[in-house]
Image (cartoon, rainbow, N blue to C red; front, side, top):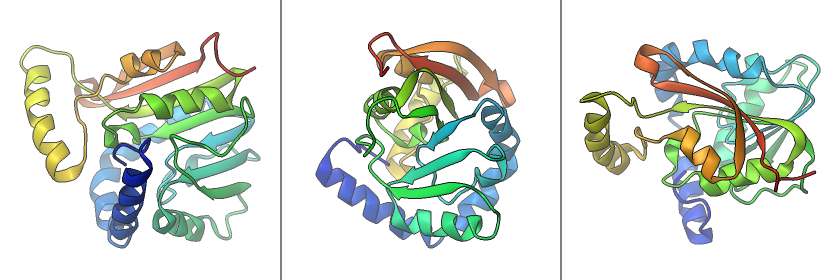
Length: 215
């Protein structure tokens, strides 16, 4: 989901992800062996009226809190179609919404929780989307993030910076984001931040809108 803040690029991105949706099951089988263990960490903190940003094919559906009112947004109609098929018959209170996650179609401060898992590693500049998460979340609400991040260690960190050039070019994946810094740049107030997984390559962040956020 590269550069969603640009309307033309949004159309190009939507086309690309709709095309990938046809074969995304293979990607899921390869990646979820390593990622599924961490999804529950984030969703344990979600409650109330919840927005999921970049819901994709619905990999978070099994972790949604029971009885929650959830709006699941994604740019790709194809991805959401798969998510809706997965949700069918499960009795979940989910409303699916095709939307540009950097320009959400919701008023200020309407959600108790806004969540995104492994979304922002696909963006060159996640700050506009993070800012939108803050805008639509209540001042006392929670913003929950789970993503791949740069490992800040000698040798490994600089190596990831070099590899990032290739992963962006060939897969659209940014493996060297510093998500905590990006969240602060978007005006969010970090409440909790911890590294998970092998060498801390995954980061969980709990934040809330900054003082200039929605009320």
